Image (cartoon, rainbow, N blue to C red):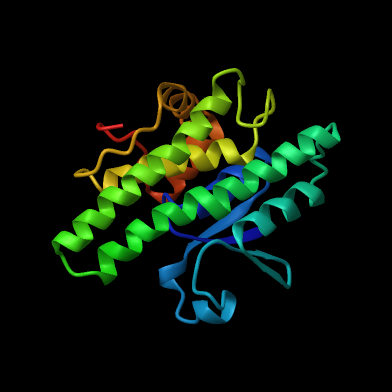
Amino acid sequence: MYTLYTMPGTCSTAIHILLNQLEQPVEIIPFDQVDNYQQIAPTKQVPALQDGDKILTEGAAIVLYLLEKHGVALDTISNKQQFHYWLMFCYATLHPAYSKLFATMTKMPDSQARNDFYQNMAERISELWQIVDKQLANNAYLVGDKLSVMDYLIAIYASWGNVFPQLTIKLGDNVIKHVEKIAQLPEFKLAYEREGATHAIPANS
């Protein structure tokens, strides 16, 4: 059985959903309930996945590890390239853009400068969502016709705008329809239920 250290409704939840899809048993442990979590994940970030005596960190690395271990292969080099592109887009581009908002919320005092930064980041994140929206215009999933962990990730990220109701982060019509579809998948709903999290598309999207 795997052990997954997570924070409800975050990118670590995507690993939980992926494990559900792979039909793998997993124990879920909130990272903030672990006294020595930095010994598990030196960055103190989630996710961290324990597989026997092996500890894995960094979401993208965990995704690739699980897919390889459980024999989930992509059919063509083209699909593989697209998979890697969107995996990096989610973890290295879209997620960090939201992370800047979260960091500013806790580290920067309330001020006009913070409000201006919020607005600039909301516009930047909206631009990133337009890239996703364009990809979904003619594709059933983010990587063509194949459901992948990136579909879970964008559904999770889309809900993060609820933390900033004063901002307008435009997701795009294709993204909204896609997120609504992904959020109804049984593996997605099960993970949110087990973690005690809620999922909703922001009203001002």
